[in-house]
Length: 171
Image (cartoon, rainbow, N blue to C red; front, side, top):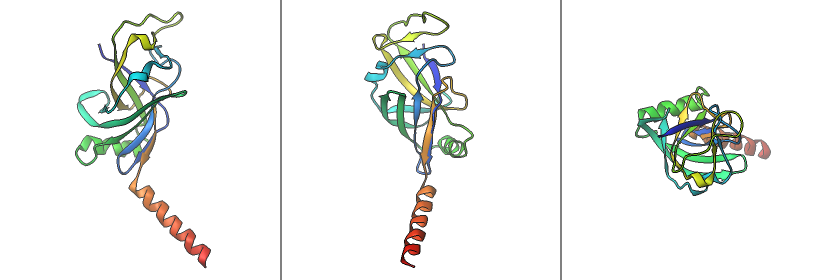
């Protein structure tokens, strides 16, 4: 059974469709699941990027997936040239309407319930298989967020500011 877990962290969005974020933070998600450090170690990309966990709405790919001390860092590309939904997701991300990330995964072995509270303790030996990472409105994990989106407009604005700065130095 595919489980969906949303983690929200900072998101970066660019006009080029490149985005970065944290797909899973530290600590439990809303369902009480905890994915322990080292569990994502066998994840290889690219991983599908979906809209709201809808398998019929792929909107891009995640090219970089790296587990760090503060969570599962990801970088990917929205297929803005090919998908109207990807363009819509890009606009929502850029405008701050949507900023959550959520992972869909399978476990090869059943994870034991947590010793306290709700949820499961998911560890490397359970064989977590990352199926997809979605851009979502309401993430299950409080630390799962898009941290940045790159924008051609941002690059143009920076270039203009640098030109004005150079001109002011010469004057």
